[in-house]
Image (cartoon, rainbow, N blue to C red; front, side):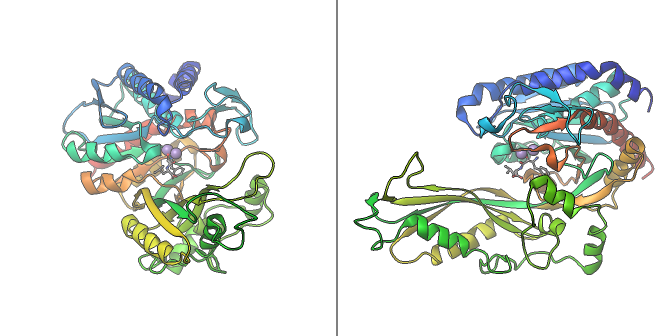
Length: 464
Ligand code: BES
Ligand code: MN
Ligand code: MN
């Protein structure tokens, strides 16, 4: 392809300014106080797709936040790439741990990003990565080398479970028809070790509530004589793992796909430094399921984690009280071929069964989704691999990720298409955490690599 590097260097400042403008809008889908900002962001995405060269762009209303759909069809006989991304972001809390305000983007140098990184909520997940695709389209259109058809589907509810996108996809199968889905919403190993994500974990997210006495009690007058829901909840949670860090829920591992020795040996070839990993997190040891390596624990093995736990008195000073209720939010990351709804049921049955007399337990399922694995012998994977090789000068490593994008398995189910996960973030970019950032180099490298995927995918399709 011609002029890609020149086009990017000529427009670099504008590319950065545009993403910075988008990052200034707090499009927090989880918090209804920010609804107007989420809607405004959808409008900005629409305008950006029009300016990049889409023929039609629509805002599709849903029961929640809208989906921005855009397309440029150059020739019905050519392949069609469907780009998916999300314009909503996670809440920035705890805000006091940010070094700069989450919605006032700044570019600062870091050890891993010597050319600077954009610090803002959503910079990497996913506004920055989504916007690489908008700019890549602009580049291909303006330099007259868009080789195939493209459709964009950018949603505003990924961080809250994509419920309405599921409905939209099921109702618009014809419109969304495509040859491959392309997503940048994952990461890669390092800037000098490109990788393509070949798997995502599934998810089951539940909230639990343990109720003891009907009201908060004086912990002296009643302490020792009634069940304390917080003590009980802590004990129940502790019982969900055994001494080998296996999950104790009966049936939990029944459908877990066991990888062969060869597959595990192949995985172990991916570059990884345990020492650097521990240093980056300031921990003196890793912790997890016996019999598995760190990279296996966070990708091919299922997990159960408490994400939040509360109850009783947490204010300043001391208050002597036995709370009436205790709560926790628990996520289970799942692997092929676990079914998330089935696992949610297994959890519920087990958790209710281990509650002692004297408390009542409620399990409230939140959301979930299936995991995903993509084969590497497809045209899609080969085109992506060649694109990375062209721009990074190195073959990318296939790697399964521990994160979840539940809608990906639904795309396969409803649209019959495979997804290519071309992520350009680093694990250390702090997505969902304070000081989220995205490397300027990564942002521009993404814009450079994406057009090659379009080209190679189109060529490989023509070759059969
Ligand atoms: N982009 C992430 C998922 C991700 C990040 C996958 C890095 C692989 C590598 C996505 O926005 C996300 O946060 N997903 C949620 C699940 C969703 C249902 C809220 C997750 O993984 O916690
Ligand atoms: Mn994301
Ligand atoms: Mn996310």
